[in-house]
Image (cartoon, rainbow, N blue to C red; front, side):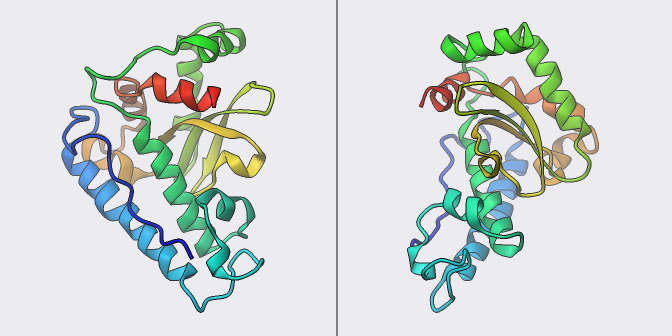
Length: 206
């Protein structure tokens, strides 16, 4: 059985300030994400039967496999949150290092569907603000390269719908409350400063 581990951040905890504070990174990555990892390892450790109903727990290899196949419940929740957070944390760079505009095929598709990157950002932020309760707003691609923005509650991920996740903003309160309190809209608007579009382009082209 694969043992899941806490991902290493590709930047220092303070590197995303002032958009995301060192304190928020400490709680979000070091405590919340660590808890999901610990919980998932507990749920999938032998001699537990396979929680996805096939073979044994030793056969589980990837988070995506669990998220695609697991029924609603603790296993899905913890695997989904790990997958979501890994995609989330890996898409950021410090303000001075991030590529702030998309290029190539992704930029062309955004302009084709929304007319401009700014129009896309406005809809993306609105979907994030409008998601009731906890969850995520996603930009994903279908098998034909068409883009779609979805609101996913709690631990859900677009892979459940056969989509390729590209970009996500976390709207669980633990992602922003220390820095923005109840100002979710301000948090979402600020995140564009640290999105590294090179990462999103690679996901789209891959």
